[in-house]
Length: 114
Length: 113
Image (cartoon, rainbow over all chains, first blue to last red; front, side, top):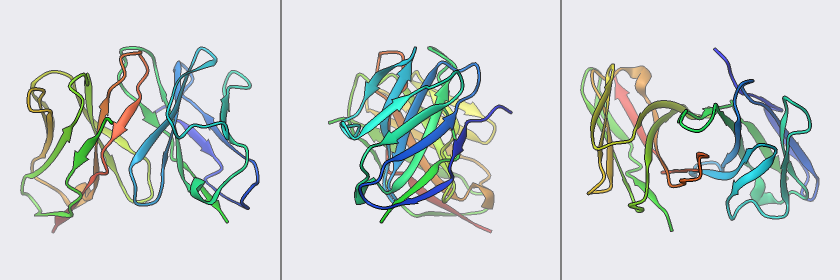
């Protein structure tokens, strides 16, 4: 069964450092997403991406965050200068297209900011 | 503020019983409703989606939607220990074609053998 692949599975970084989380969505999917889940909290929407641009973003997705699709397969989330409160599990998800109505989540990347 | 509310539990049911999970949402403009299962430390896994009022059955799972009451529920029949997980209700508020889901905090279900 096709799956969304995320790397790294766990990253530990110092506050103020830049972090890049990587995702390989399912190959024929058109919409890509990042969600995050702080330990013990809700899963929260960060950003959606379609046709090489951001289609929607939440209030959490401020200037410290950016996304890009540098090639035909990878979809990355960059946090420019990490803060302690960025510690969370970050989930990438992809969707085949409008009307497909099914988000497939990756296994997640756990980010720990010290 | 668009909210999705769930009883956090834990909800404990004996093996073989029916587990009933409930969710309310705040925005009447919501279009799509989902139940995800999340095991500890894992990613959400879609169980059911429902878009119109009434019941939708898939195996041991039944989702129920009442848009007038802004209420979604999930019934799990013949509960198994492997059903023990946190169940997340999610609502799509966006009409833009992408799936910006708003999640509830989840109800932790424990099925006792």
